[in-house]
Structures are given as structure tokens and as C-alpha cells.
Image (cartoon, rainbow, N blue to C red):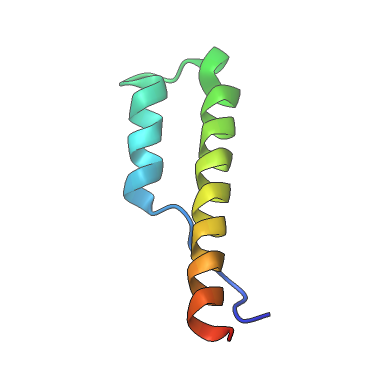
Length: 59
């Protein structure tokens, strides 16, 4: 494997998701929605990172 770790979401992005879903207070009913969205965004970012690494390093 060409890489071991890819940082897929920056801390600012995680904070922005928390603000989007919870605002100034934590709403437990939205907790899993926020986790799903963070996982989806992270997976998309990881796929994009992998594709760019493969383009750069593989013939």
C-alpha cells in the first residue's frame, strides 16, 4: 500500500458538522445522523485521496 494514514476530515470540518447538527446544544436525536454524515464525508475524502495518490504513483 502506498500510504498508511490519510487524514480525511480536519478538526475544523468536524466542528462545522457539530455546529450544523447541534448548534449550541447537543441534541441526542441527531447524534447518529451527524456520525453518518461524518463517516460519509470521510469515506468520500479517503477515496479522493487514494485516487490522487494512485494517479501520481502508479503508471
